[in-house]
Length: 142
Image (tube, rainbow, N blue to C red):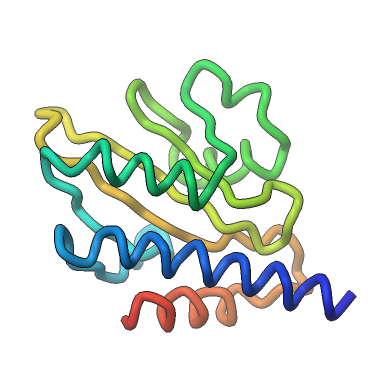
């Protein structure tokens, strides 16, 4: 079990590092206390390259049309974010892992910027949320 957990942790860190590398020249990262997530504002015209990296780093994704068919763990994350609205996407590294690494893509009304929030969501009381957040902050140097 420890081997599996270590391997999952390494995959999560690699995904975060990939996202950080892809955005380092186009956006600064900050901590979002409201959503317990790291946050970057991605401005036009960098949306398509950032979305491509998201799809590569976090290969499972849902939108407003298919979120109701997602696993319960993913629907839970969507609910924590206030549910998906038109144009918003939720990306997940592995919906069967606890804590689960996810990224919310929220285009702004003017479509000139999008918010990208990356978080760990722990469904199990055995997984300490504080540890997951500390790992996330460390990866993004916050």
